[in-house]
Image 1 (cartoon, one colour):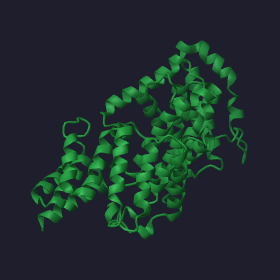
Image 2: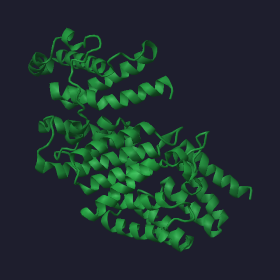
Image 3: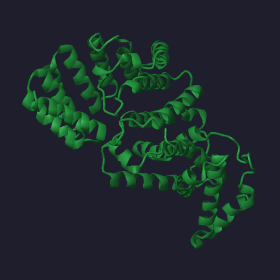
Length: 415
């Protein structure tokens, strides 16, 4: 990992902790997040040249706190609130940690920040978008692609969510016990989207963003520690572990994508697979089956197959049928079609795929075109497959996926 990449990874990990620390002090989400973003930008500019401070978390909290206090002091229209908050803040000199010492308690506020972002005062889409921005560190553009909406729409959604938190007077702290279940459903979905963006980046030169998958797994472990009897928390952690286990085999040395059927399974992380299989095996009999448990069960079938040819596709089809009943959505149908094609032939998969043609969320999505191309190629329709591979390559914003799709099209062109 390069020095710049290491600093970026460190800043992403520390960002929610710094935001949480400011929230505990000042209680204003919008102002605190703006101050943290300024501190992160300053660090990204200064640290590569000057070196990472001995206490990077304390440095960020100090800089962000000063930015926040300066902002409050310069806002004449909010003078009364400014004076009240400034009185609560330590003097600037007291904010700076002594050499080798962090005056701010070493407390990871990430989970508390997650539950704040998933407050019931916010709509479900706003909860997810705001958490991805504040805790996951994803850009507005990345979040927009994850939800298949225009970037401007997502920017407005995030802005409205911040304003709603301000208007509702939401306080920073863990929710009461009876609120946990509702909040955790939204939190789990947020973590799933963060992990998914890390496992297959929606744009850019790299297929994977390991810093996101690591952070999603880390936070999910913390959620499970707090909710050890929740089957869906266990299911999500198992799904992440079983999926992330394939990461070393998903790309070649040059970064090119390697599809599941062609991966060297000896490179899969067997420790992660063992942990994931044990988690899902333990949770399924003990709780009502939910979508994350079903997805983890599908991942376990893949993980335990000694080869692509030995995969139990009929079992996977059954699991996808259950998943479509529990949590129907276009991506589930897309993956279900692949499983049906492998179990019953490509035409059966294409028939199922046709359901998505009229879905506005999927009609122009590159993955629909890519799956259609693959199934047409299996069927022997090379002209149709070529057209779909080219369409998929035009639509994706991921460079590794684009190269892979163009390679598939080139193979068809040259026989």
